[in-house]
Amino acid sequence: MKRLQLQRWSSSVLSPRARTVNRLHQHIYGQRYQSTAPPVQTRDDQTTAIFEESSPLDEQLAQIVKDSHTRHSQLQYPSPPVEAARQSAKLAALHARLYLPSRLPIETLARTLVDVSADPNPNFNNASLATLGHDLLSYYATEHLICTYPRLPLTVIFAAMYAYVGPKTLAAMAREWGVDVAALPGGEVDPGLLQFQRLEPGTELPSGPTHPTARPYEAQKNWRKTVTSKIFYDDEFGDPLKGAKHSPAGVTTEQASAEFVRSVMGAIYLHAGRAAAKRFFEQHFLSRHLNISELFNFQAPARDLTRLCARESFERPVAKVISETGRKSRHPVFVVGIFSGQDKLGEGAGASLMEARERAAVAALKGWYLYSPLSVRVPSAMEEPSALPWKPVHVDLGEVIV
Amino acid sequence: MATSIAATKRPFLTLPFLFPSLSDSLALGFRRNQSSYRRTKQRLRVKPDSSFDPSNLGHDHIIHNPPSSAPNAYHTPSKFLPADDIRKSPIVSSTLNADDLPGVYKSMPERKYHLTPSDIEEIRNLRMNDPMTWSRNKLAKRFECSPVFIAMVCQASPEKREIQARILEAVQSRWGPKRRMAREDRQLRREAWGRDA
Image (tube, rainbow over all chains, first blue to last red; front, side):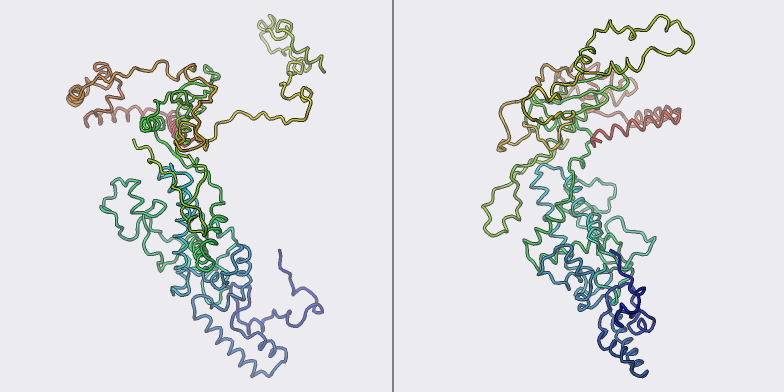
């Protein structure tokens, strides 16, 4: 919706208070850099009263000096003061748009928008909330994935975790929530904007781990790192742990947006409790569509399937041609099924017998790995009051290792 | 309408324009063929499937003829369900009989499991000491196993591998851009099979 252009209306429509956009007014009220809300700590009534009463020049000058002092005090803080949150229309709109619980105060929502690079004071930035929210997000996403698909290989779990709660997804969510970023952090900025110190263009981002990890033989770069060791030594996406989050150079927009979304999760948990946090996770994170069957990448599917059948003591898988057309033509199509005894494990179509067989093996392996129990309960469901007694979830032997 | 549908069921011999005429094959220059609008329309008039005919049922019904598609990856085959899952049915309800279907390969090699550890030691010695004579195929023939098995139990000496790599490089250096690109594309397509793309 476009904002009304009030200045263009005739003066008869406007009260003198509405028609205040002139140079003197700007001078008195101070230049507002990025905000649409009124600046904080200006005594609105008093100034307007002075303005309307056309007081003597000395009093006006005194007021200007006083306001500039206020402005000076406003500028000395790196982030907007706490009282400014109640005045921000953007914050109220964000609170309503996300349907946040009313027990979450708008001041905390304002705090989630202040990145650690904007305000290093831990009492006023979102670092602590983001840490809590990050742990909650990882926990809820992990338990959902492992309980829903108990046979998923670890690499696929890592990829799915990255898709659900990875930084790119969180940054996209912040954008979808309509959170704008401030060009520069400061005390005069509207508290409804995401405030962080931007990284200078052309700065090299550290690719590897920035600090020594607990992994032994870290110096051996060309040694193979097993997937299993990533559970222990690396983060929930299978990437090496990053070091201190705050660097003086600043952060990227993606990092700041991700920290904001995490801290919203943490704030909801702190103010509205566990149930509200879980509900928020289900509504905003789990509701995003992720086709897990597209995350697989098999190198030798036929061999893996043979090993799987040997491990589970099924009959050896045999590829059989179910139907075909145009074998001697330029574009033949073969439909091959993989059978173990009389049971069909998978089916695939391809332009050659080899392709159809490989695709059928891929389909069979996906059928194995994407098994999902009928009634899935996650461990955090036990935290609810009057929860039914816990039944153990399906635990699988693990992926096929050749 | 009913008569025209019946008319398309004419035997093939009554449609003389389908045969190549003698004059066609003899004519050297360009000549217009004998298909006309009426004949083309007539041949395209195919009787619809009976399930599409709403008059053969006494009541309203939904026509549902889904196109053939690949099975859903989220559907776990009955054999892969764990024993405590109630969806697991002991009866195989497959219309396909696996024994009736032809295999992908012409003949499945019989698995013999006849090689002893001393044989494998001999394979390794032969391949290491005289790799030019004892290639994988020759060893497979002598020990009556597959070349894949030879590759599983031993590896060629480093010198032989280097020679082989140089031969491959020499061959590939003679490829033009078309052949090189076609080989690379083939490799990429092959990798896409595993991603099911």
